[in-house]
Image 1 (cartoon, helix red, strand yellow):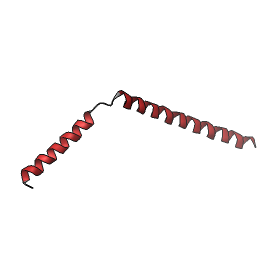
Image 2 (image 1 turned 90 degrees about the horizontal axis):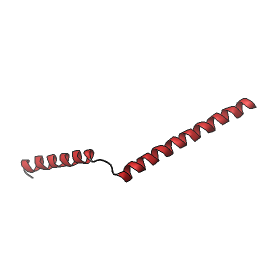
Image 3 (image 1 turned 60 degrees about the vertical axis):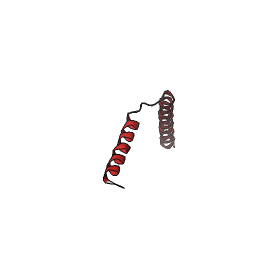
Image 4 (image 1 turned 180 degrees about the vertical axis):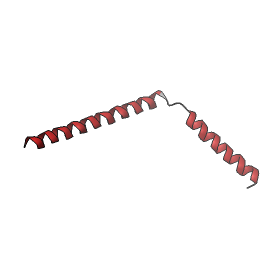
Length: 61
């Protein structure tokens, strides 16, 4: 492999990766991210309620 090929391939790879980073997410991807974030928030809220109720029960003994 010549020196020119090595540098041109490296540059082409970097250009591809930069273009991938600039790509805007599709509507479906954004919606999936939003649903995931909402599900995580609901899960954390549920977990917080469980811990608060457990603490209340422990204090009530």
